[in-house]
Image (cartoon, rainbow, N blue to C red; front, side):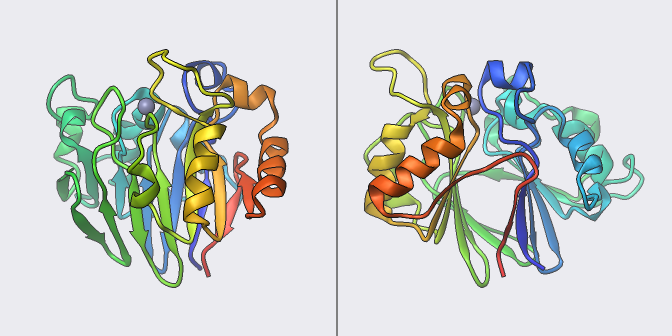
Length: 254
Ligand SMILES: [Zn+2]
């Protein structure tokens, strides 16, 4: 069975540090291939506590869209769990260069545990088992950040990770299922907050018309507005299917 499971749906500092939502990222299974995306704080614990339990030693790889803590806090322990304490050299780590080079988030000693480290770059294609994926251009975010287009059968999935809005975004992510990180309810004008708001989501999905849009990675203003209500309003306004992710929510890809 192929699926994506939202281990966590928290985004930005307050929702993460108060754990108003879990911050574990996403588990993706396609056929026999398991990939963990953005293991933020709590990923390991939430993974082991999820029902049915998700077993990190069955992971084939871990992907970081960027190095911010809410996306990478548990990357080291997840590598250790994937490789059974480092005793089984296995798995691939995909990460932007700045997550590995300057002020890295991946410890040197766990780097030896994985079979391979693949550096993500702009507009490149990658494969891990049954999951093919590609990056687009770099996002507008404080650190090197990529969104991902997953080419998986039978459904294509796009993930728009953290970014400030830029017009090209509309063209870059065309998956049937669009997972989008929406931290803010309202835009913040000229404030230097590199995150999308619901206004930006509207601009994107009005054009792209994904079969399903999944909102996730919520900041405080989204949590206060109740994401499921925001999603229902969007759905009504645009006539498109929009879901707000909740912790533990699973989307069947078959
Ligand atoms: Zn970020």
